[in-house]
Image (cartoon, rainbow, N blue to C red; front, side, top):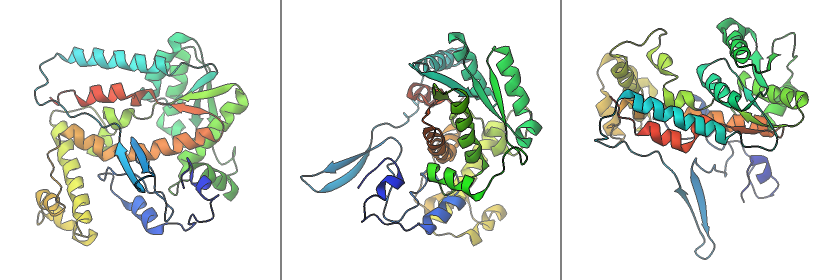
Length: 343
């Protein structure tokens, strides 16, 4: 039995309706160093993995999964190009990706967070003409300056910007609000972000009934280093040595995750901090070689994060008959980044 959503599966009487608490708790506590994907959350059902195709052999009574796309490996000797080669190449591909996602017979808009990623998409898309942008105005986005930045970007590009207010006085959140979002997202790790996005899409459709496409900046952080400050646990300018420091921290976290997977439980993890256990030991115990570059470690670390984001972005938009499009995740862009020499 298969369907595009879990609730479609439940139409069949033989499909189990038992919540998989063990998998759900593992999702909630798992390190992002595990690049696997979130569980289905229901006993007896599985998710098709990203870039996966399920082959069902009726003659052989077999079921298998195969991948139709993977990130390419970096060439060991890619040749020497100036930095401008990669800057210009990325710019050209990003512009092509945004233009491709503007192909539509219906209205489109953009979620403008005020960050670099969605602002870049806005700047490229604005060349084709004006379109509405939508931003979350909450105590958090007001305090961080994101809402103000979104307003400034929209003004500079002559785009309408709708700042949708979310605070305790403007929206009385009840359990029914959460039930509607849970029904839409089918996600057991709901946060305020999903509630905001669900209502932001609802506002967009009410304000612009013909709007059917929403552009997002998702995917840039995961592949362009947007979480580097988080990994290094500090803000501020980039310093010499930060690249190797990030690699060391990501390697240590992967080692701890590998140790846990190998049966070295959480009670032993303090031994890593004290130096009694080494990362190499943990990787060996898990039979998991760690020959990846710093960039490979970074993207693997946050790939699970991306799976989570795309899952809820798809569902909060589809609930309001809106299709999300993510220019930063064009396969040509990801393949280009994957081949950039680490130095």
